[in-house]
Image 1: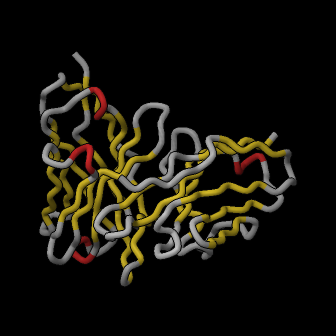
Image 2 (image 1 turned 180 degrees about the horizontal axis):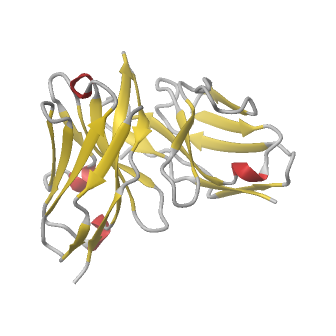
Amino acid sequence: SYDLTQPPSVSVSPGQTARITCSGEALPKKYVYWYQQKSGQAPVLVIFEDNKRPSGIPERFTGSSSGTMATLTISGAQVEDEGDYYCYSLTDTSDSRVFGGGTKLTVL
Amino acid sequence: EVRLLESGGGLVEPGGSLRVSCEASGFTFSEFGMGWVRQAPGKGLEWVSVIYGGDKSRYYAEPVRGRFSISRDNSRSMLYLQMNSLTAADTGRYFCVKEFAHGSHRFFDSWGQGTLVTVSS
C-alpha cells in the first residue's frame, strides 16, 4: 500500500519557524494538501495543490514540494497554531486517497 | 454555506452491521464527489471511501474493501456508508466529506463533525 510519512511531532517556541515534512514516492506526480486539526474539531484545509493558501488562512502558512518530499512551513508560529497536521494526496492510480500519519505541533 | 450532518453512529458488537448517514446542504449535491474519513480514538485520519457525483464510481480503502459499501441519494442530498462484519479496528469517528475536483486535483474541502462508531462486546 502507498504511504505518506510524517514525523510524529515537531516542537518550536512562539515566533520560531516550524517545518513539517511529508514524504511519498508518488509526490513528484501528485499534489499535496495539508490539513490542520485542533483537539475535538474537524480538520481544516490550510494548503492545497502544494503551495496555495485557502482564503482565511494566515500568510505565515506556506507549502512547498520537491521530488518525493513536501514541506509545510509555519513562519512565526503562534500558540494558536498548535494541533495535528496531516498531509494528503492521491495514490499513483488516483483511485485511492491517503493521509500521512500526522504530526503533532507544539508551540511553547 | 456547506453543511454536512452525520448520524447513525453507535455501539455495535463485533461481526455486526451499521449504517451511517450524512445529510448535505448548501451546495448542489449531485455535482460533487462525497466520501468518508475515519479517525480511531487518539489516532490519525484514515480515508475510507469516496463516491463520485456523476457516474457514481466508488472507491474504497483496502481495510474496508468488501465489507463497506458507500452510496448516495442525490434526490435527497444524502450520503450513506453501510458497514458490515465490523471489528474493533473499525471503531472511530466517521467524518462525512465533500470532495472538490478539478481535473486530477481532488481534495476534501468540507467536513462534517463526525459520528462515533464503537465496535465492542
